[in-house]
Image (cartoon, rainbow, N blue to C red; front, top):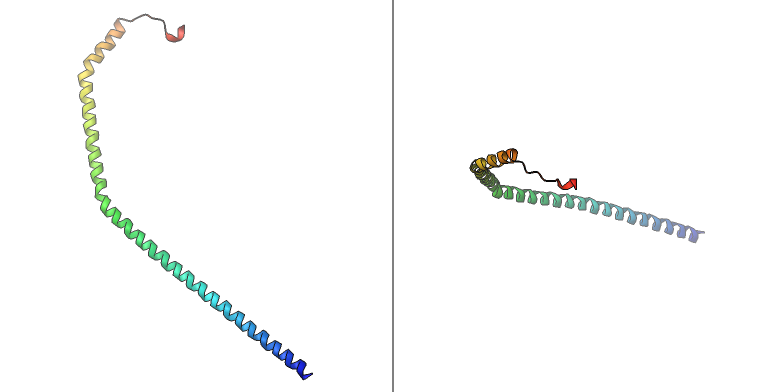
Length: 115
């Protein structure tokens, strides 16, 4: 019987050691997982900071260009409007003459859709 009890005791010891090993493995895995989460959060924060700095530099570099482009486009628009006004004043008499002629001297012809 003592051999049987020694076998049972040995099995219980082995089972207890196995449980301790499994428990330590779980703790180790949880610690590694926590550390991985912390490392990932740090890497994400570093990446965000880097991209924020790049954005600020880009805005500083190109911020002045926006104002310059706006003023340049405003000048171009003003020039084009002045040119259109000038052309309309030059052609005003011709347009009026054509309209008066079209009204006073109608040309009778059959409409395209009438045929």
